[in-house]
Image (cartoon, rainbow, N blue to C red; front, top):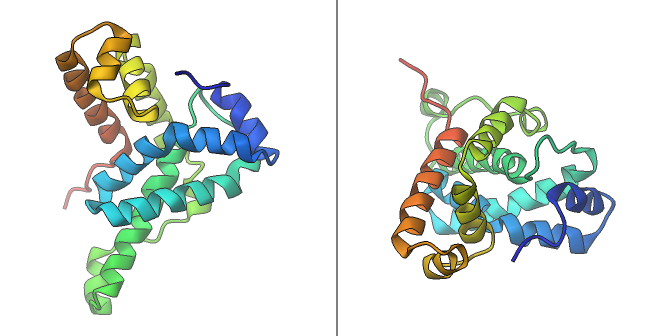
Length: 186
């Protein structure tokens, strides 16, 4: 099942206030955004909260968005990553660590307004998506954005269940690598 309209069209309609267009984008991307959040946070509850926060921020920011590629996912992944970083900082603060300890372990505050539109991360994600084979992009679309299980995706694409499982694992690893910044050398 394909999107009813390309992301660019849906984004324009949602930016103009269309709840229906935004719901379509939400349904298309809620799963990959959740996986990104869960990968960063490691907690299902926090990942659900960050996923929701990501779409709230996206709704507010859509009117000013100029979609760089064909997919809204890189932009949503950027928002998700920074929402997750904020959640990690909140966890640390709530754990009642001392200010000195927090200064050593908490990364600098992120200016979401500036970072959400940072071209570097969006370009890395877009490059990863664009660099994938057509089969890998279709597997990702079916499983990650449309919720197909391995068997249904295998049947839709005419390949084996194992092909879907293995390729989707590689795709997720590539995308995770694109959204994760390397740790600075000490």
